[in-house]
Length: 150
Image (cartoon, rainbow, N blue to C red; front, side, top):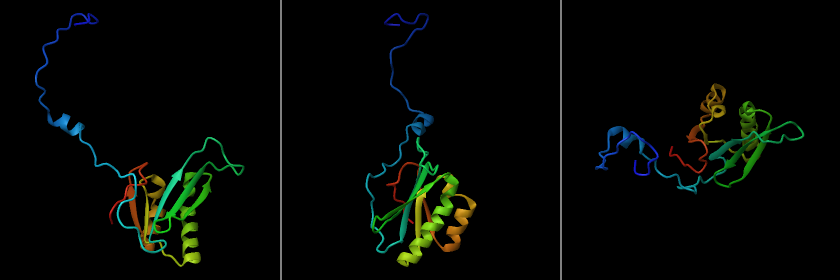
């Protein structure tokens, strides 16, 4: 080698690189995810709800909770958060939020947007959303600003 670091290897002069199919596939990129919400917001409360689960926290609350789930209304940006001991409590927290939205705001949740985390995809959660007529929109993990059409 030129710097004498490796012996026994001969390097030829660089030639033009011809891309192969595997190289092209490996270098594919996805469309950039916008930093802000794009498209029109819904025109009424509970038309679309954005949800996410955070945790575990390095420090538990006095009640032993180390997660929280948030529900944010697309129209008003009003956010409700519920503290959770385990992620498995996400469905019960959603039922509580859904009942609150219905009772306090006379709002039926039309769409729930969340990441594709397992707690949002459980059979009970998906079955309940389907039974209520609620559209489930999934985004990629850690991309809450990603807006999917539907």
